[in-house]
Image (cartoon, rainbow, N blue to C red; front, side, top):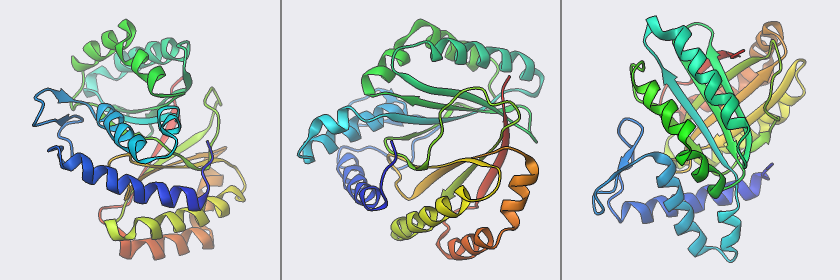
Length: 272
């Protein structure tokens, strides 16, 4: 789903109202350890269920509630395993990837391996809709994967959930040699629309750089001023040339006064 600049800006403003409504039922702003607590309801819930609640509230405010229910779900999950469990962790993630790709409703599931810190991985997922993800979430293979992962992880899974995408999306799948760059962009809330404007211009400029395969921007569902940027490059040399390009340096200079946290870019290869 390729969202227009105006539409996504509108959605970001709307999502802020949804977060406010959710806070009214005692939902915390920042979930702890990858989940959140509904203090009025008791059980601990992962961010995906926070998103489902957000979508339900949003649907009640829209003229077409079916739109919210039928939107794809995007998940970026960061995983860190013990240094002595890198090989077993990679094998486990490969099995999870292969099984999940066969499920109804899955549109993309790639596993990435960080190049400089080999005990860190990322899962990129796209599900057709909420129902498709919920079915996956309860599948025996998913539950088994999570149980086994808990034995070797050094921190809980960090899930970043989005219900929209902007930029130039690419289809998942095997592309040997592709260089992935995942960047967390965090700006102060008053700059979320300005940041999106910068990312919009950056996506256009980057798509014209030699060697660029994709540039995706995922605003977080419950923190619309936080963005995950996913870049894909054919070679390290093409990515290095992009870093030195005038438009990239201008982007970083304009973004800096808006930043609420360190600009965090990490390099990955796709797990074989």
